[in-house]
Image (cartoon, rainbow, N blue to C red; front, top):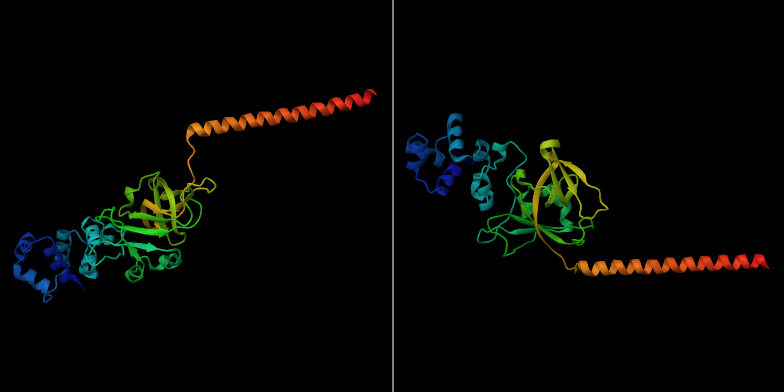
Amino acid sequence: MHFNTNIKFLRKRRGRTQDDVAHALNMKRSTLSGYENGVAYPNIATLLVFSKFFNISIDTLIRINLNELSESQLRQLEGGYDVYIKGSKLRVLATTVDSEDDENIELVPEKAKAGYRTGYADPEFISELPTFKLPFLSRERKYRTFHLKGDSMLPIPDGSWVTGEYVQDWKDIVSGHAYIVFTIDDGIVFKVIEDLVKERQVLRLYSLNPIYEPYDVHINEVKEIWKFVNYISNEVPDPVIPQSHLMLTVAGLKKDLEKLKYRLKETDNSGRVKKSKSRKV
């Protein structure tokens, strides 16, 4: 039970004294001090008062050691993204930080994908992933990079490292944008999303490669969503032909095709003429 350390931590995080909080909660300072020091325990009614004051659920105040959370995780809670309050699939993301308490970007290589299905919420598993930094990304947001295989998102090459920004609230999903979607059944996939949650409770996933058909994933199956930020690849993309050059190329192909048709016609006519002469003789 972490209630006493949590309320003390939250009070100090807000820069409030015991007198300030006790006055706001309409209780004696000595009573609040007893709760923080663990020599007194609140009843259910008092727990509800603390929960409302800090905007954090009773379950979170009791079960989770807030001192062990990273800054981004605390911001999620303070922003209202508390799994026990929301009653949804949203959760506190397992993450890692560096020696200065700044968020790392964890790498999920191909060989770690199988383990990610069961370890995505396990801080110990996440802590074992390699990490790196991209200095041009915001320090206020959470990112993770995934090694993706396959050609479903061409022209993004097979084997690219795709970085995504963690989506805290799935209401922020924008149809037509690319996301990394994680489900237990399908694992990690990189797709363009059509948001059909309001109409059918599903996300429709599209590939950039047109040979792959779109498919639906029920929102209850989704564990994580990461908004596409960038990708890293050691392959040079195919050159893009300028429109003017492309038109000249098409025109040249048409001209060559007409020449070929003419030659085939001449050959056919020549054969017919020779055949008719042989009859006459």
